[in-house]
Every structure is written in structure tokens, then in C-alpha cells.
Image 1 (cartoon, rainbow, N blue to C red):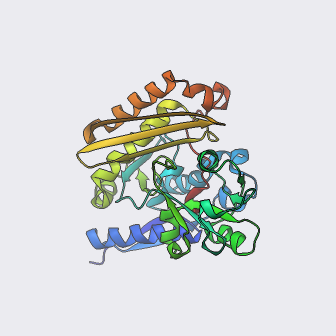
Image 2 (image 1 turned 30 degrees about the vertical axis):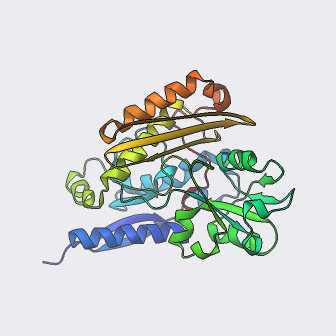
Image 3 (image 1 turned 90 degrees about the vertical axis):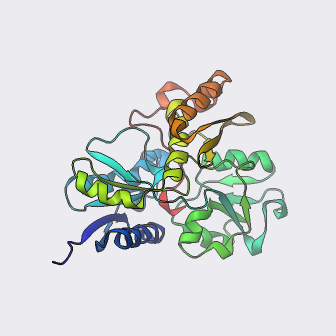
Length: 318
């Protein structure tokens, strides 16, 4: 008997479709089930407002989750850094596939690196985290807001609107634009967003049979790393515009570094734990950072999001 085709909900941007296509291929390869990608348009895709004005990167997630809960799709794929850390009723995180390169990358005019840019150069980024860390590396450049998908941002450099843009390396690689990268920033220089480079595969919590099937694309080391990073973010209770970075690496044992920035002030900490203690590691590191004054850099309690922290990182297209 012919296997029933699974419907995968995805944003319609080129990058989102590319990463959803990779998950679809993995699911079919490991389970034999055919997968059809169903495009879903989100508010974040059609609005020209800055993300902090329309609800942070959660706007890229909510439409997909609503489509999932209505039964219009069977499962959905997101950039994991877009997911609020709070639980979503009726939704299960069924799998975290192997994480791609988590680092940030600069695409400069005619291949210029950060050190090559002239004083006053215009760098496009929608991320306060990136802007704050770039300012530590080059205080004489101007980081300016930019919206649109990766191709739109790359065109802004090509057309001379910006001298450079900073995007997630993994996203550029997914759309075949890695050759345009001028410079890749190591996590010691620019700490990535929590879960950057990782994907989230969600399904309805009640659909335990499908959840078990989707678990075949799970990558344990990637799950542990992003659990540590997102646990730190949750414990910091950061709002959507807070410049917070977190990066965990390792297999059996994780090394986690976190950073919170506010102007020229920086709170930076690191720690280690067994992979099985990933969530505890994130919470403990956050507690140490809060003791060092991180809360004052994150902002007032009123700026915090009751649905859980999330970043203004530009969604799956950057």
C-alpha cells in the first residue's frame, strides 16, 4: 500500500524552503514516507515594520503553529532561534536535526572584511546582538537596521546601499551564497544567537506516532547544545530586543559561553557540564550573569515577553 504523504508547513522565503526541503529529504530517507511542502505566509514575511514593532521573531512562528493546530499541515520546520522559549500548548518539539554552522558572517562590498571597511561604513543588521558585538570590534562603523530576506540584503550591498551586511552563515550556505562571504566571525569574537544554525521540527503533541517518526532525524548533540543555550536565554528572561548571545559546543561534555551587552558594558561568562545537564548548565550560567549585573543590560521587567524570550534576529531568512 502506498505510504501517506506528510504535509510539511514552511515559510515561503527561499531560505525557509531550502531548510524545509532538507528536512523533508531526511524524513523520507529515514522513514520511507513522502513529504509535500506546504507554503505558509507569516506576518513577519509581509510586514515592513521592524521586528520589535510587530512582536519579535515569534511572528515567523505563530502562523505555522496555527496551521499545524488546525490540521492544515502535519508538521512544521522553523529556524530554532526563532522559537520563543516558553512552551506552546498542543505543540511538541519532535526533533532537532544536526546543526549547521552557527557562526555569523559578513558580506562586504567587493569582498571587504570588517577590518577593511572605512570609518563610518554602513553595516546592515536587524540584530541588536550583532550590532553591539560589531561595535566592540569596530567602534567607528555604523550598524543600521535592515529588513528583507537574505537575497534582498545581499542586493543592498551589491547596489551600494550598505558597505556590508551581517547574516547567519548557515542561512547563506542553505541558499547557495556561501561564496559571497567575506569573513566568518568565530564565537569568541561574535557570540551567536541561542540555537543559531539549528532547525526545529514541530508536530501536534497529541500525534505521538508522528512524533516518533520525526524523531528519526534527531541529532542528540545538537539538541543538548541548543538546550543549554535556550535555557540560558529563558533564565535571563530577555526581551525580544535584548542583545544576548549563547553558544555551546561539545558532545559528551558541553562548554557554554554567554554574553549580554548594553552599550559598552558587557557581561560574559562560560561554564561546562555533561550533556545530560544541558538545561542546568544554562540556568546556572544565567544566574552568574545576573549576579554580575546582566539584568540591568537586558532592560526593565516591562520589556519582557510573557510568551518567553525571543530575539530580534530577522527570522529564518538571515
